[in-house]
Length: 259
Length: 331
Ligand SMILES: Nc1ncnc2c1ncn2[C@@H]1O[C@H](COP(=O)(O)OP(=O)(O)OP(=O)(O)O)[C@@H](O)[C@H]1O
Ligand SMILES: [Mg+2]
Image (tube, rainbow over all chains, first blue to last red; front, side, top):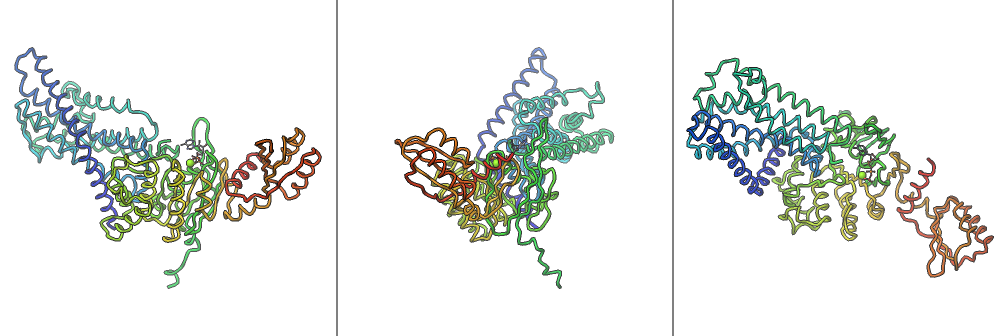
């Protein structure tokens, strides 16, 4: 049965076409994120009274910012695209796929992860070039850490996407969640140890150790890695379960469409 | 060997809905569909009719698993689908009401290819590709393949939605209000195309529409709904015959006196009275053959001279309105 390959190719192609046709949106999104980065960068420089900001502060900031940017892309791809498709009335057509909406959505998540990585690689390069701080890009260590960090974000995306299926018009809530992400990343783990169980927190910490501290993934204490894996798995699982429940409720209430 | 060729009796039945109930939960639960049972033979084209809120869309979505039925059984080509939405989907596609059904940002061709692919029908297969091209040509879209759907008129958009559903090449297709918002000409075209498709490809179509002309022209059978229940389920020809002999148009000089009007109203005949250029035109649907004598008697008693009386050819619209009216009165 190569039916699934047909669906996968179709979703990939659809996303590619949309991506290149709306390249302007992508570019302007990139520019916006870059400008915000500049504001933060010059902001913290000022905050330190014009003195030279410690190199590691800037470097940590770059790591955090790019990770945040990847997270909001992952999150909005899930939560926003489901809501949007429900509203315009294409979501139900996706639900008519015999392989299930779950499969179509998974294909979409894979293709959007690819564009997400590309997009943020550019943002990272721009940020590093502007600040003159060249971080260590150890792909072997970064890939698993970043994927696991995003795992938790996928969970949140599923949960909010599920909410959107049942309760329409929660756009205001969408944006708020993006800023909550910042909070998750800003909590200092040495001061608030339990915060490591929050989504993004441990991943951000480990990514920083890799890119700023030059550590490799096998240098990390087992406890930290376990925290990373467990938080990713738990948030993802909770999100998927929440989405499934929301789907059931939406089917019951007839709200999969735009009613 | 017998088992290998055993034909399940319902294999020739495309869709069976039995005892379907849907109550939308909420502070005030909505009984959208109540005990609906009907059956669609394979290859048939049936119309699902009913006033707004009758439950047509809900039935279609329940069958497709987009809405969870409260109770009841649905079977598609003999396979029970009530609790296995996956099963129905491999043999059914749909154009849903009030939704875009297509991506406005993509072109016509991209849409058709994308939605067909969801059913594993890929344009990379030359046979499917030719089929898509043929379908698009039939619907007069061959010159628009590279146009983004967003730029098309409402009618063309709707055609793209219909083609995108048909391109999935499923034996069963639901079209919920396919002619909504279409101009007379486009609706007329669809009227011609749909039966052609059903005939040429042996597909089963379930069409819900408020456009009686479309239904009368396209469907062999209709299921008429009102208030969530089926109030008629018959061949169009039979429904028309039911009303054939009892529909009359009378014209009389001058206005009707009050007691004549009251008398006519009391006949329970959905009478329509219009006065035009000093001539009263009375159109009614008599509930029983004998009612014609009563009508003539009461007109004579009121001193009305009947100038002409014609037995008018009924159409589905009148049959429909009459059935729904009677159902509402019964309640
Ligand atoms: N998601 C929902 N939640 C609550 N009530 C609903 C929902 N969807 C439909 N209804 C109600 O169920 C009833 C049947 O609606 P349905 O849309 O099936 O009717 P319809 O025959 O398709 O009408 P129309 O001709 O207007 O399309 C209506 O009273 C409607 O208000
Ligand atoms: Mg409807």
